[in-house]
Length: 368
Figure 1 (cartoon, rainbow, N blue to C red):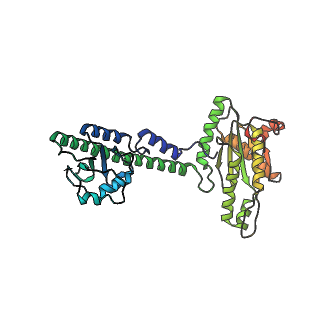
Figure 2 (cartoon, rainbow, N blue to C red):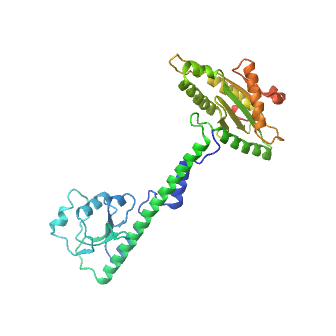
Figure 3 (cartoon, rainbow, N blue to C red):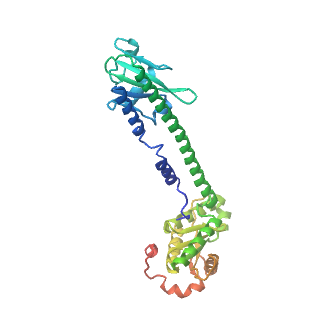
């Protein structure tokens, strides 16, 4: 109900995330393969990219450490204040500096470690790629060191590319959010959340074209709140605004997702029922009329009720615009007002169908 299917922000966001797979919950699938390759190439059991806090939540590159809490591991490496350059510690046993940093942390018993800094294109370090073993090791050979440096560049580039992509995806999501907001601003009446007149007419013309093309059914209703000026005069404009918004809310509870409702005047609203004839429209109008009449509105002058008058019509296949059917609905609306208000009237041109108004149909409106 309410609007011709607008762009749904959450759907658009989901599509972007699925398309780019950048902000997904799985932060380790790609980097884990890199870490495994490092472990195999350098013959070490443990590999981890120790990162600055801003990267830890979305990038996890480690191997051999599944049984340990990543937060404890990152805390351990943060306490060590790793070197801005590469390092290679062959035997960590007996070194108070290393053992003191393990307090309160569940981590492996590292006895040797080497690492290279992870940097952005400007040379700014944002982490360290570390390889470690649970036993002392000989110093790295030149070829092993070259491999580690090469892997460090690979991980650095991966993080930088992913970081840039995350910003790009966030920009895309923000643009989609703004687009959805602009769609709402361009089509929705801010007070009642019904379509504004321009959008209602545009979408209604689409439905008229479909009605002609598919030889289907279509019906129009015009609704007007009775004595609305008196509501404003007695209870104030704030109360009048609540009446307008509530009327749309009540109508929405009767209508279906595919139906359209628009605010086409101060207290006048138009409805297009898709795949429904005048009989179904009469029943829908009656349900709306009864539902609105039962609503009590609070005000300083005391609670009050309102009623609505409704006119119903159907378009004809030879009509070029939905305006023709709306004008007949409007004429029926004023006939309802002349006859005492608080009622639903069928347009004269559609009166030959009125004898079937209360008969069964296949629409939603067959029951109250």
